[in-house]
Every structure is written in structure tokens, then in C-alpha cells.
Amino acid sequence: MSVAGFERRDIGMVWSLFKLTVTDRYLGSSLGLIWAVLSPLLLMGMFTFVFTFVFPGRLPGREGTLPYVVWLLSGYGPWLAVSEGLSASTSSVSGNAGIVKNISFKSELLPVVGALTGVFPLFVSFAVIAVLFAASGEVPSLALLTLPIPLFFGMLFVSGLGLFLAALNVFVRDTALALPNVLTMLLFASPIFYPLSAYPGGVGKLLQFNPFYVIAASFRAPIIDGTLPPLWMVVYLAVVSVAAFAAGLMWFRRLKSFFDARL
Image: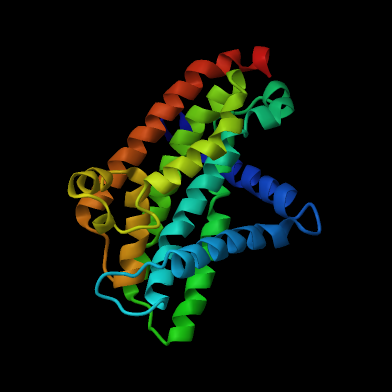
């Protein structure tokens, strides 16, 4: 059975490439795995300090610093997954030029594998949140069982963007160099560190359809409020993710026949 040109055996190929990527990136050196945990911890610690003590923020209707810290991390963790996944996807084809040119396989699997590497900082953020829950004595809600839904659609959305950027980076190598700056601007332009209520009315209504905000909010609802994400968010995220993946895949396949000449 084939969906969009993908077959069941391609799932096994993705898993094999994912294990190879993880082994090479995180287990190939003595500090690889340590840095995989330490890097997101340092970033989360820095932004938590800034938005808790330098520019202190509070959640409406909730007293104390701890609820705000959990709220901050439950949105910033998914953003780290998006950022890490997009960065890995963008350089996945150009960084594996030898494999793409000399081995016959579906090169569109490489950006998908790159997107999946974003789960590592996400799981680190979940671990920190779990520690904070345990320290506060708060009992997690069963709504947490729905987290695989935004995880799946979030990774699908990142895979779609990654397919587009990976193909573009083969022809415009500055794409990978410019991406960190673009992601930084998107981070501060999205309601990740601030609630929607902090924005002017018209801007807030527009930003609620920002896919990066919807991904973060879909994680925050079960973690912070112990509720399911609003149905419109789930449907919207599903539609946007499928559309992004389909468009990215079409773009990638249109350009892949020219890769050999540019790699």
C-alpha cells in the first residue's frame, strides 16, 4: 500500500536512518549524548531566568512563579523541537551528498529523519516539567495521554517545512546559514514566551492561527490546564500539517532530479 509515493517499507528505512543519525550525532563522541541533554537545559534555564527574574511574567489567575515556569517550558519545549528539527532537515540532503549521489533510495526520507531529531529537546523539556510537577506535589492529568496527537502533527508540519528547505538548501546554501536568524525572529514574534492576552486585540486574534503557537498551545492545554486542546486547534493543526507536508513533498520531488548536478 502506497500513500503519496511512500510504502510500508519506507517506515523501516526512516527508522534505520533515524538510528544511524542518532548514533552518529549523539553517541559518536563522549560528549554527544551529554550535550544533547545539556544544550536544551541551558537554553531553558536562560529563558526561564530572563522571563522569571529579569522581566518577570505571571499567568493570569495563577499565583506564584512555578506555574509560569511550567507554562513557559511547556511551550518552549515544543519550539525547541521545531527549531532542532528544521535545522537538521535543512542540511539533511546537502550534508549527505555522498549517500544521495551514490545510493538509490528515496532521498525525501532524509528531511523526515532530520525532523524527528527534534524529539530529543522535547523529551528533555518534558523531563524537567515532570520534576517540577513532582516537586510541587501536583498530580498529572490523564489529558497528558493526548500529547502524542500534537507531537505527531507537529513533526508532520516540521517534516513538510524541512522538505521544502532541504531542497532549497541544495541550490541556495545560504538557506541553512540564514535559518537560525529566521527562527529567532519567529520565536519572539510568536506567542511562546507571552500569553495571547499580552498582545493587542487585533494582533492576538491573528496570532492564534500561527502554527507555531497552535503547536505550543496544544501541548500546554493538557500540561497546564489538564484539559484537551480545543477541537478547532486539533483540526487546524491537522489540516495545516498535512498541507505543509504535501506541498513540501511536491516541491522536493520536483527538484530532486537536479540534485546530483548541485551536490
